[in-house]
Image (cartoon, one colour):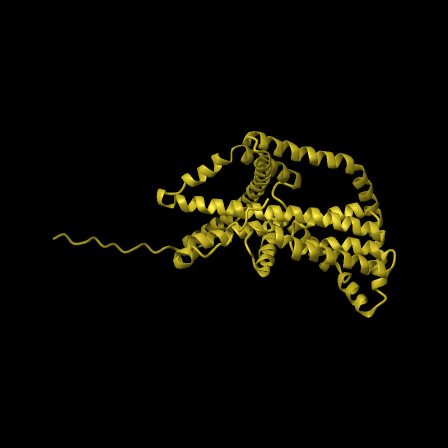
Length: 360
C-alpha cells in the first residue's frame, strides 16, 4: 500500500509573520472605515424612508376622509406639504430672519453678563475657572461638537440625498418592499413581510407623535415667551420645536438660550421662563405624547439615552435624531427573529410595536 506523503509544514519566518499581521490589521481598519461610511448612508436611507412614511401616512388620512383615489391623495400629500412649507417660510421668513439677527447680536452679550453674575459666587467662580483653565477644555469642547455635528456629505448634501430618497420611496414603495422580500427564501418570506409591516407601523407612530409634539411645543413656547416679554420669541419657539426631534437632550438644549435672554431682564423672569419650558415639556412629553403615540414601541428611557449617546458618537446629529426609530427597528427584529422563537407560547400575547388602535 502506498504510504501517505506527509510533508512538514514550512515554518513562517519572522518577517512573513509581521507582514501577515500588518495585512490583517490593515484589512480590519479598512473594513471598519467602510462600515462607518456605509452606516451613515444607511441612516440617510432610514431618513428617506421616514419622509416616505410621512407622505403615505398623510395620504392615508386624506383617502379615509375623502374616499378619493390613491394617486390623487398622494399628489395632494406631496404637493400640499411643500406648498404649506413654502407658504410658512414666505410669511414668517422675514420675521424669523430679523429675530435671528437680533439673537446673534444679543446672545454673546447675554453670555458675558451671565459669566459676570456667575463669577460673583464661589461655586460660579470655580465653574468659570474650570472652563477658562486653558485650551485643553476648550479643545475638548470643540472636538466633541465637531464629532456630534459631523456628517458624511455635509448638512445640505445630506438633506438633498434624504429628500430625493424620500420622493423615490414615495412614488414606488412596493418596488423596494417586494425587492427586500425577494432576498429571503420562500419559508422566511412571511416573516420578512411581518417585520416590514411592524416596522412601518412603528415608524408611523413615532413620526406622528414627534411631529405633533413639535407643533404643540412650538405653539406653547411662542405664546408663553410672548406673554412674558422675551425678545425673539418666535425663533426660540421654533428652535424648541426643532430640538424636540432629539428626546431628552433636545429639551435641555432648547431651554438654555431662552433662560439666558430672560436673565437680561431679571432673575424672576429667568425663573418664570425656565418654568415655562419645563411645564410645556412635561405636558407634551407625559400627557399629550402618550395619548397620540399609539403605534410606537414602549422603549425604556435608559435604552433611549444609551442609543442616543452611541449614535451621536458614530454619526453626529443625524444619528441622535434617528436613534429612537433605529432602536425601534432593532427591538422589532429581536422580537420577531429571537424572542418569538424561544418563547412561542408568548407570540400571540406579545404586541410590541403592534398598533393598538386605529388612530389618525
